[in-house]
Amino acid sequence: MLKDIKEFRCIILLKPENDDSLKKGNYLSLKNTFRMNNKLFMYISLLAAVLFSNCQTSQKKEKAVTPSSNKGEVYAIDTKESVITWTGTMVLSPDKEHTGFVYLSNGAFIVENGQLIGGSAVINLHSLAYKDKSNTNTPIHHLKSPDYFDVEKFPTSAIVITNVTTESDKTILVTGKLTIKGVTRLVTFPASMELKDGVLTANGKLVIDRTDWGIRYRSGKFYDVVADQVVSDEIGFLIKIIARKTRGC
Image 1 (cartoon, helix red, strand yellow):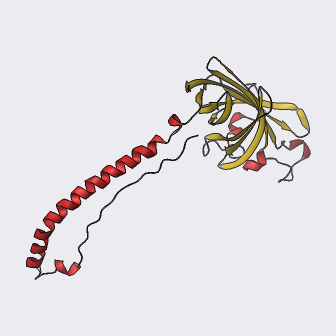
Image 2 (spheres, rainbow, N blue to C red):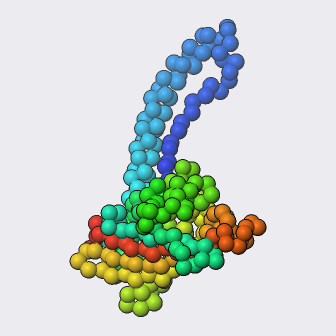
Image 3 (cartoon, rainbow, N blue to C red):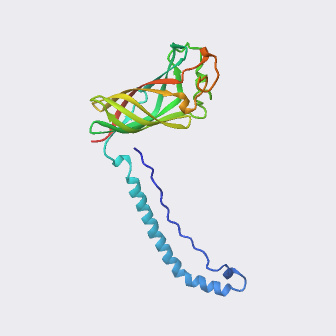
């Protein structure tokens, strides 16, 4: 995972010891003081150069602590071949699904000894679309409105993997921080993963309660809505990821 890099700055402030030295009548004293400080200024300049050099060295050492020097192999997500399929339903009509797609902006996985150990992905909510383009019951612009994902204000969603447990040879349990509409919650979901010829293929199934992320439109939990108008709080996601090896042994 990427780590924050702290920036160090070295600053030297020179301040007159006595502001009265700048008053009228003290010109001669001030002039002598400047003469005496010429050599001192040279030494301070030298010291500043040394300190600045040390700061630069510190920065270089800090920058060296990045994922590029960490153990593990990095697999970059192929955003053209990866897709998330979402599904929503009405409470009284679970057979009438609203299904669509959303695509990723970027992301990567970290693999060590053939095991997934971390990663993150950014989801482009502007790419929200229906699988059935003839669907007119809920226009796609409504899903992008403040009632649902408020895409103008929150154009992306993101997930950061925090833990991975191996269930079997190809099945893993992924835990991560999912951020939607500025709200971050922990989620855990099963997934399968396969590595072959520098390509990582992963499939997962995640179901969330949308109200945990502040999406309450027509939720029976929060509003007195006519029964046949209640929208299920659950949103299902089928995740298909293709990632290609970019770094590692």
